Image 1 (cartoon, rainbow, N blue to C red):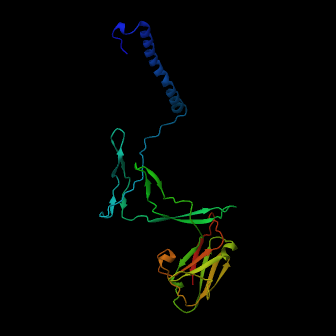
Image 2: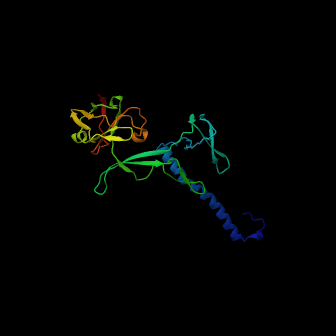
Image 3: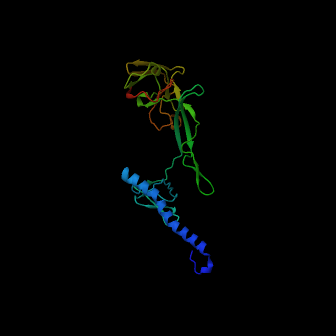
Length: 275
């Protein structure tokens, strides 16, 4: 405030204004005391150093046009992500070469383990997550939700093992096969003696306890031997992908334990043989 004429303000008000302006100078110096104290304590006493500047990072979803062939996006490519408040462009730079294609994730499967309690049945639960890359946004374009981690639902499943071998193929006749599984350590009798055994056919998994089929599970030290005798019908052959879940040209033998497997210490196989 500048007083140009004496009649603009009375002398007592002028002295008050001058005092307030002088007080602002001392107030500014006093407000710096806290910063100087913290700087002395952290920089001198504790000898801490400020971290160097670090570039921000982000995940980028790039989708090719249908008419665009597969390509490689070279490292060092700048990607625009809007602007700063001052109007300067906000840029992200790729740190390595990235191959882009038209491949996409159709579905995901999530396997989770629930402990057994007095109110819940524990075990493994499998959930199929459809459209996992679909992201819900509001009218402003802000991301609301994503289903990539699924939900708490799912169907209860059992762990097991399946092997594929041409030795298992039988279009007709009668013979006995033996599949031997050698473990790294001794496995409990409950685990070794409680299995559901299946063989693959052209239409479905065939349970080995079906009529006309016999099998026997023997434990020899750290080895599990599954011997089965089966006639010619139905033929034992490779199962389609819709049945087995995998693309395999050989027949398969599947073993599913009836008891709950401790996933913290699962049985570890060292050798499998089929004769």
